[in-house]
View (cartoon, helix red, strand yellow):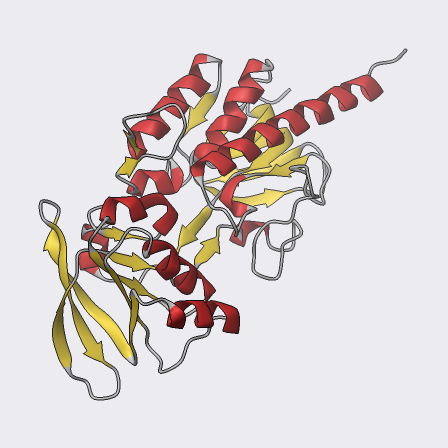
Length: 317
């Protein structure tokens, strides 16, 4: 067998990828993890994680991912810092092409995650995890009693705004247009919430603050008048959607219309036998580290069963 052949190749290294690796490695499948452009996934841009079970004092996102990796490696996972650029699932063994080499696999687990869409400001990048967030469920509790901004006008933005009012003194929705894209029920909820205010026809030009102080304010630009003003706030939640990292799988695996990877209900199986999906690349609803880890376990167990069935049919009675 070729030197670069593996029973299981896992593409991606967030909570789903590492959990799949832990389970596959403990089943003596010697998996390979190709880490991708953002090793550790979205948790590497998160500071405190307080809702992952087993860490009562909380843990830093990057540290949590280091622990996942150490656990996977302890059981024999091979880890390569490489980014996948192409796959061939049309024949077996499957082929996975990356920047640094080509690998073949009996099974492939896709754990490429999803990326939050950002405004695209330098100041936003600098203050990510220091008052700038894309996940109210993850970070809302850190803003208890504070005033924050939510950027966006869709269902996600309204959901985040409503959720944040559980903790925050005031939530201001900043939207580029003069009306929301959100569904009527989500709009009605937001408009009825006394803690939510709206600033229309406006974009954020800059987020003000430092890693030491956190966010202290924003510069707002009225898109109709061009007027720029300073606005004091203690947090910015960007809620303009997520993009699943499925570009290389288009035409090779079945995707939902929104780009997320389609798996058979109650399993991690894709439409190609022997290829499994897990984590945020399959989930546009929960998008939590714990749910990603759970589906990573499912993917590894499904892969193990698939390999057992392959071996059974290959072994003469």
